[in-house]
Length: 178
Image (cartoon, rainbow, N blue to C red; front, side, top):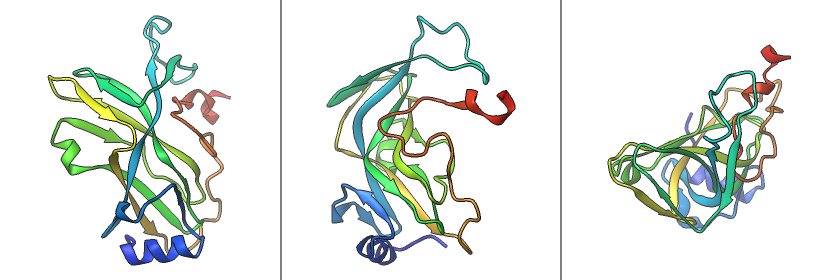
C-alpha cells in the first residue's frame, strides 16, 4: 500500500521515518519530492576501456551548485536529503513529470529497501538533443513510500548502507565475484 501525505507526516512526526532536511512543501499527496544535492560522479573515460561486472569502475567526482548535462550523457548525482526507512517501509524513486518532459530521465536502480539509511544516488540521463542545466536544491524526483505486509526478516545491510554523496556502482562486490 502506497503511503498518503498524512501517513508520511505522521511517521515523520513520530520519528519512524527520517527524511532530512525536509520542508512541508516537499510532501505530495502520495510521495515526497527530493532535491538535487551537490555531489556528482561521471565515468572516467580516460581510465576505463570497458566496464565489467567484476571490476571496480573509475569515476571522476566533483561538487557543484550548478550542473549542465550534455545531450545524450549519463552521470550520477545524489539527493540533498538523507533517508532512513523503517523495517516495514520500502520506497522507489520516480522522476518528476515536469522534468521528464524536458527529456531528463531520473532513475534509482531499484527499490530502496526497508532499513536503508543514507542519501540516495540518482542516475541522470539527458535524452534530449540540447544540454540541460540543473541547480542544486531544486526538486528533482519523488520518493514513493509503501508499507510492506510485515517487517523484513533481514532489513537492508548491503554495500550502499549509510552512503553519503553520489556513490558509483559497487557491482564488483557482489557475491558472485567473491
